[in-house]
Length: 636
Ligand code: WTA
Image (cartoon, rainbow, N blue to C red; front, side):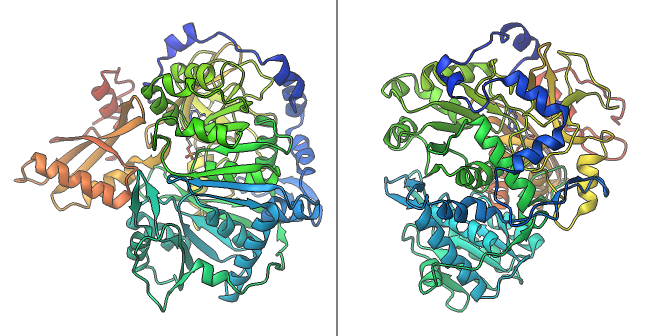
């Protein structure tokens, strides 16, 4: 089992048992004032709990069965129900007379801003939906989206859902090769992209990357391009069309496609054990229910908040908590396209003050990066509007937790450390504002979720002992399948521990029942909160003619959480020079994108392997970090 080095288990158990209690004010306002009682009631009958949660949404037709377990593990929720995720995020608010309310506030790195009311967003989405229909996009078709954090990404995603098409958003930090692979797997019919994006003052030429990716994708008929920052781009007149021209003459009303609760809403690719990413499929009904209930309870939304989640829409956090969650809850969501320290290291705190952000949901890597700049920057800002803070993406080390609590939340704002995954769709292990907190613990499972820590035989381990994190029940926003690969779905998540969902994470529970997440078992890396597979990186290395084999591990990094160290076997007679290291680093970056940060490459003669030939990354890691080797019985 891997050990996450950002925290030492025994140290955490001894020092981080202090409880942080919510203030009277937080408690008085809380949507869920009695934490323990709510957990107890919900967990008595989790299916009933989720059925009740579904009543927060508008359904065109009510379901006749809440949870269908007939074809395990292909669980179905709200069977027979009719709904639409986009309807609950938009149309519903218009019908309820809230069209004038702000839906999106967007700002880019240069300071340019745009605002959309729910009415304005509704109209743009309808225009886009009509335009998509106009070029023949139908229910069930896949639309690839490769865009920066701009309002048009939300418009495009919502428009797909309105007509029943599935979107497949690919993070704009991925390379052409990664985009190409995802488009091909999803067999997407069109691609929506942008001319470029700003990053640290430089323009990233997204269109060029998109062009390269699409070259080999036969399914792509059209490329729609948002004019975002006037980057000079090449335009293929037969295939490309500007986004503004595409929607120009369209009606601001459209016919909404009523979906079955179990109809897929989107596919989102994420990294796993092999070099081929998994297309995680989420559906209209259950996903809406899980995301709306969690955002309302975890972040205590009443409907008039300004909500800022600093993720990117290209990841699940962006899907659920920049776009669908805030919009379903009818609040204002902030989108920021840029880095957090331009022009000064208080850009983030400035944005919070400028827009009176009430809920700020970010990642440990950002907090640690801000810590490095010193207290001077958050001290300049009172950030009085803040009420609740959130953390996601990787374990938050107690030191970062306390810094966030003291200097951003000014000891007023509880921190919701939310553990979850692309596959779970929603927050799974997380406090609620009324819960007592411990610095560095994700607290307990959300009401209606039963989680546990077990050994490899599925046996519960005692408090304080590490083991595999599993989920023992079903929940509405759970992954339905891996796109075009149901076998892999079954094998990855439902065959490791009997009758439980296997998360791939290691954790321990303390004697209060609080969960402490330790990180992944050894196949997935978290670099600055971005999920990337060791196998994907290894496959990039071996695509070089001089490389025979590569083994990749994550090593601790004070800011990014993890960075990559690679052990590479070269072909005979090839010299392991510094120049070759440079070339290989570049190659990986080109294959996967700039998120694949290679800290170090070591040329080796051999890699530790199992008898069946699998590289034992766990052994590489233990050696690298001077940790105990653990069970090496399968090592050759
Ligand atoms: C890790 C991101 C500790 C975990 C939402 C999980 C976390 C993986 C936390 C999923 C947290 C996410 N504490 N670890 N609060 N949140 N993780 O699919 O290892 O990008 O399995 O989803 O991130 O990453 P993904």
